[in-house]
Image (cartoon, rainbow, N blue to C red; front, side, top):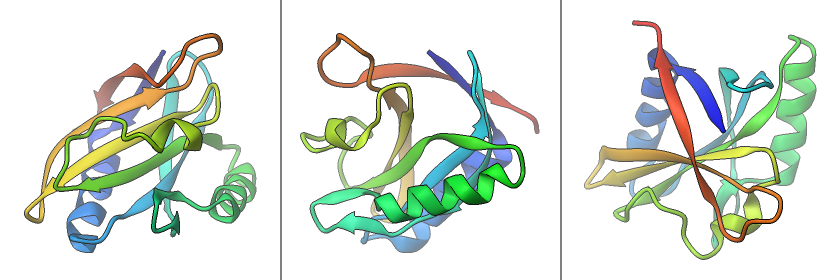
Length: 137
């Protein structure tokens, strides 16, 4: 699986992660499905709970409704991992719907250190890496 994200959008997500540190930040990725899926927007969210860094189901549904008015669909979510790597934590697979992605940003000491994208695929356990192609200036 592959997604395309503009550098400007990725920088905005990283900025939100730095701004919320040491707390976590999250949001919903909106775009055009396909291979690659093209991510065109991000809508900030609220963590579903202290134990779950991803956005709440209500935020995902609201983002989906908002995106639909612009011809966009929910491609996935993003969230930060304060002071730990941008790798799936034990609770992350439960928050990723099959066919959608989760972009994880590691924020260490207030700075975005690394990021990676993952997806859940039918028939495979755990999350699988997603190729991210950065576009634009």
